Image (cartoon, rainbow, N blue to C red):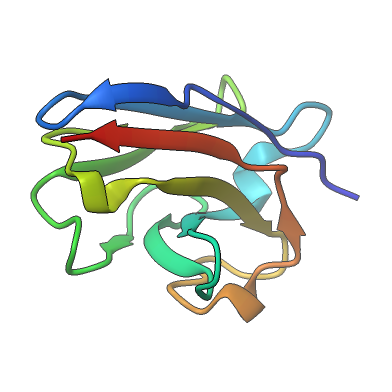
Length: 125
């Protein structure tokens, strides 16, 4: 069992930045492929970014390329999503996801076994 603890959501104005963190305490964090997804009411969960176990590979949704950066610190058991130049359409609940049996799990949410509780990000215009 992997527990994921997200933090860093909030309410910001368009153009601002937010930094989301996801911690996986009590687990060999470097064994986990990690990802971030988001969801708005009435819509399917949407891929945002993913990163491999070592951090050597990463991927992004087209909608966030050039604005969001995913990184990880395996010594601190944490993955971070740095979100810059936020837009109102980025408003969603953001979820951290983890998969222990893959080096890199990519954009398909079914590739991830464990999920956090989500953190709300609201961007006002």
